[in-house]
Length: 328
Image (cartoon, rainbow, N blue to C red; front, side):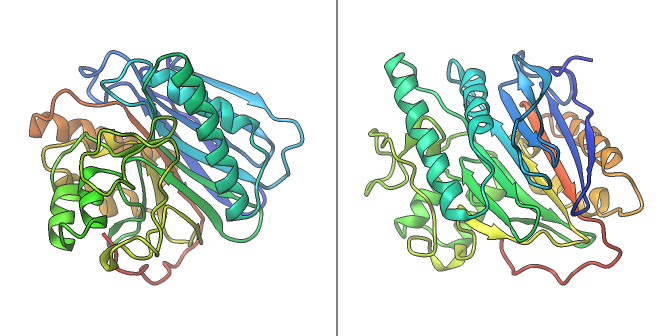
């Protein structure tokens, strides 16, 4: 089975129990895009790295990877740009060279440096392209480290709710930073409507820090969202932060193909029923989620359907912890 059709690896990893399932599809219905510009990276506790290379599932063993450490990432090459797939592949290649990291400052510095190196490399080749990058670095003990760029997302899902833990780097978020829209309008633009324009991408650079909306100048450096620049209604959703993975929740790292629908919330609101099933293997739930997505695409006539990549992770536990803080 080629990776342009589907990926079906499932990893049950030792040390801290964590179940992981991965899927990457060129088109959920089989009638969408002709190329899978998405990518992913899963480095397991034994140093085995799983990713796409030229749209095919690939794995290799990393030397000197610390036992019990994990790295998970979802990348979405910029649709509409040439070399979107290549940008995502280059980012994955760079991630393979980064040492395992135990603290947030180090992973942020390393990824900022990787972004700048690839930015200059692509600019020198005359290519303006990039990709999203939503990454979880999971040491053998302590909280996970989150690093987020673009409009891929991280969700936490239990039997009652699906909660988004990241902020899309889109024009509506830029408007919120400038004080031009409130919480209700931001929610409408970002989580209710279907959008494809982003304001920041790994490798490409950022317009989020510009003092005017829709600035044509793309800054080289990434613009990290944090407590010091976020409006009150988005506080707590910093792009770079520690995150405790709670038992009883399924965490969903995904490219925007998972909600690229005319009515995305109709689908997202069914995730608790689809994923909040501790009695079923996570591998099975990943398949069920993509089947439901394809059915929603057909039902809502949301064409063309986009590339879709998901990483599901779950820490086994019989009792759900209390819900996280209220966020979008």
